[in-house]
Image 1 (cartoon, helix red, strand yellow):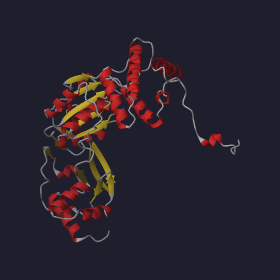
Image 2 (tube, one colour):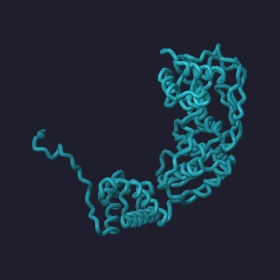
Image 3 (cartoon, helix red, strand yellow):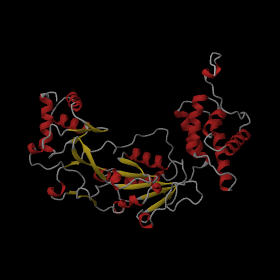
Image 4 (cartoon, one colour):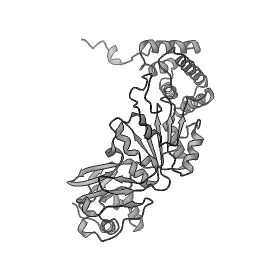
Length: 394
């Protein structure tokens, strides 16, 4: 390895003295050390280039931090209470305890429209109370965005975990990883959220299997035992859990959400409340579509009005059993974005409903032409010069 500068040696010495053998660090950890010692950040950047990268934003300093050289110092205090088992039960294992970049305050979306349960979600988060919430509703109606933007407004740290049938304890609480021949325990998102006092967002929780039952004690706000290391972690002040789903955890009888699983009743009972998220009202949805048109620089108030009228008609027909598909708020936003590219109403609609079967696509397209008499139902054309060239032969 290249020779360290004097400033870099000071940083390494600080790590040895203050972090009790920890070897995995993020750039911001080192920048904090540099600031405390009046060291220019360029020395941090140069030092990071010399260290092996473990994962996104994580660097392994084990080649310069030797366990035998570490003084007997305690780890820096955190908001979370941590009780460790005797060292001999977890030999030759480095604890991965560095703060994670995926626990953060989300950015405020200036085009977001506050509606529905947004005010209640903000109030729950502001309380800093442990109060698990289950949010259910049809796809594309803003459940996840509502929670994210509530955190953004309040400046609350959060971490989002996408649940799948394969999600298990290793994914959620953490597991062992092999880094440069050294066994490292990487904390999972649940533990990172607990230690940070952040909001844990379990997205599409009804896609999970019985493998997520490891969250039982987490949903009770109780300390969690990490069985693989023997560490017991208590949730820090402000920690909370929100979950989103397309169903109420009872499966999907109509087959629309075929991947949705039936969740254990005892698991569901651990959520204090369930919020049912419908699609927005006509006025609210029109505002959402207009905001998206503003976002992409092609505002057309008449088109927005007709789009929302069209989507409402389809939803009413769906509820009456006349069609098997629905136009979500998210789909309307996709149409608004597509319209900003092609500046053609019918083309934007046809491209965004092309995922439906032919009968449904034709029905939706025909309905829009009845609502907007100024457009023609024309299929989008492929315009590629290679097919027009006389020089191409087959």
